[in-house]
Image 1 (cartoon, rainbow, N blue to C red):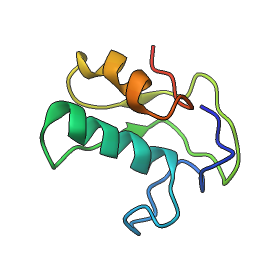
Image 2 (image 1 turned 90 degrees about the horizontal axis):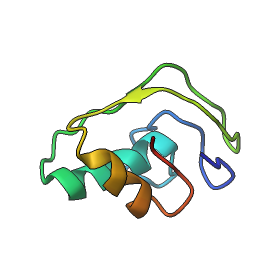
Image 3 (image 1 turned 180 degrees about the vertical axis):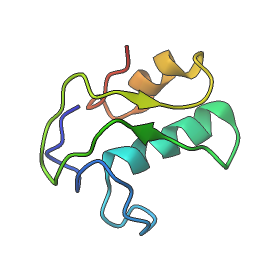
Length: 79
């Protein structure tokens, strides 16, 4: 992902006032999967403004993967 517009990976618990990559992915998955208690976990974290390639993360249904990339502002791709 391109991290320029984000305050790092980990959700800061501030309802997106300082958007993070984890917060954005969680919001998109909630829209796609239509369930509120969506959890997203990653193998590591990044700092504010840092880009990442190949960062591993886990989340609910595999069918959501393609939709995630389309709806995540073009800054996050899922493979």
